Image 1: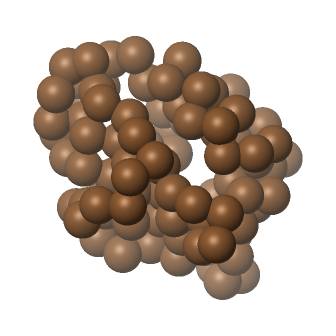
Image 2: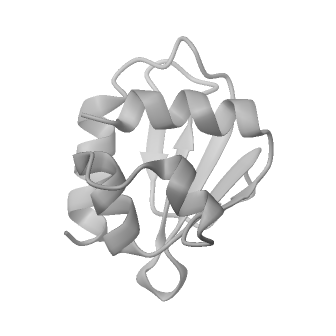
Amino acid sequence: MDLEEITDKIKSKLSSTSEIDAIIKLDFDDDGCVVIDATQNPPQISNADEEADLTLSCSIDVFENIVKGNQDPNIAFMMGKLKISGPMGLALKLSSMLED
């Protein structure tokens, strides 16, 4: 899975974000990032590196496994594979929306 595929998958899963009112960045380091502006409905999704209320940092492989349900995001966080900067409650809401 590459950045474009991840961006498309997020767009399809987050067509409405009534539960989230924040800007979220998924940071894949050198592979780029996806920014979800859920303060708008429908949310605006881009690959521009912008400031965010919540930033999740991990490799694309870890994110792909989380989205596919092969990796529990809580365990990835505890193992240091997923780093979270911002409100943990918001991260949990996003996680439940992205899982298959």
